[in-house]
Amino acid sequence: MLAISASERGIVSLKFDDENDANTSASQIPVLAQCTSELEEYFDKKRKHFTVQLDWSGATDFNKKVWTALCEISHGKVMTYAQMATQIGHPKAARAVGRANGLNPIAIIVPCHRLIGTDGHLRGYAYGLKRKKALLDLERNL
Image (tube, rainbow, N blue to C red):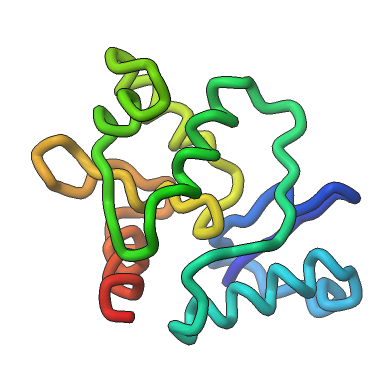
């Protein structure tokens, strides 16, 4: 199950929530309805890019830079933490990229699951490596 939160500016949080049922009133709020629709298309292998508005207010500039760069990783592709650090202009900040990745409040849409270790292995994911692998497999099998 996915738990989605939004502000007037856009999606604030998207998290896997295995303990609670979906909020049926979410479809009555336009940005939540759009988010739900886009996620359904993603899981049905009909969407590669999300257009729903995101709200990162309160986040640090560095985290926003990492999250923006995450959104630029092509569907079905992966990048290492070190490559991401270099891409955003901080080549020695792979660990900081990892921290920002771990703080990403908007799973799937901000595809933190697309970052892997330098050795090519899956590394940390807030919702478990099994779920990270499942998301990558879904995207690769499109």
